[in-house]
Length: 341
Image 1: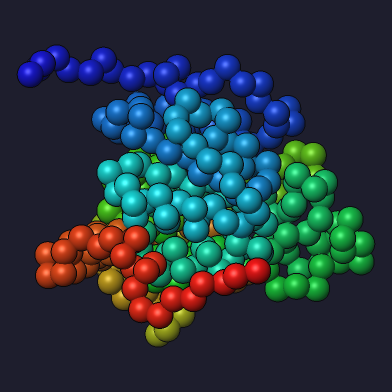
Image 2: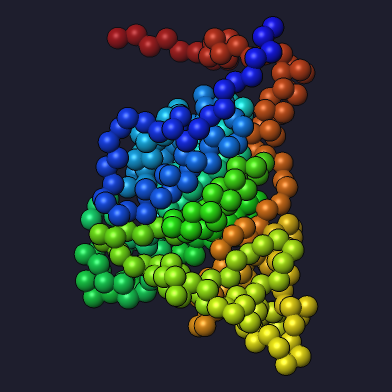
């Protein structure tokens, strides 16, 4: 048996010769670059990767990744990916989707994938708009958003993707930003290491139909005041001078100024492994309160048995007791009818 080691993979190994059909300046380019840089660092053979997508601008992703892949139908990527992961647990299966694809027509598939804890890695590109169909409001568009399908302002209350994932009992939930490359890569690596459903919301700019959707977060002069980075075991501190923090007051979060008797010891210490979903759920709603920053990083990471392991274990147990099934015998068992013309 050969003991030769496989050659090290590089970013170039995951690039294809396909023309990338995204608008110039689209945030998808930055995400693609991050993924192509992270995959070779995971120590997994290239033929073990599968990228599965639904419909939308983000869902062109499989064409640009030199891996196996499926470009499925609208909203159904989680269902197809679940079937693949159950039948081939050895594969590294990544789902690429958008806020419209996964939270509208695909919403039900998304929540059931998460509650089952299928070992999939989900990248949900959130640009708060339908980009592929040219600028209609999406399930994450803010109330009052004027678009081609809501000329007088959207009346829908938007989904909070992080809260939705936590509410579905997802075992790994995180958020990053397309242009925060070091943070995005670190977040994707953490998702890849998780044994179960890993859901990563990536705030992404659509510079054609919703340009500047995340300016308060991405603008260099503003980001320190509007972002709090979640780091396990560290207090929730933010601000240009890192002089503000988040602490718990009863069942509510509050912003405090450090100094004058208030120290980092009084702040919330981030615990991504807390099994109680109440804590990350509070964090998920933080930015919806006036003056609060937007959290980025890993909200939750807990260990729960994977769906595919439970299913395959059950199959093995039944086969050990009853033997391997025979489809031909099953079809011919019981009452049968012969239909004649």
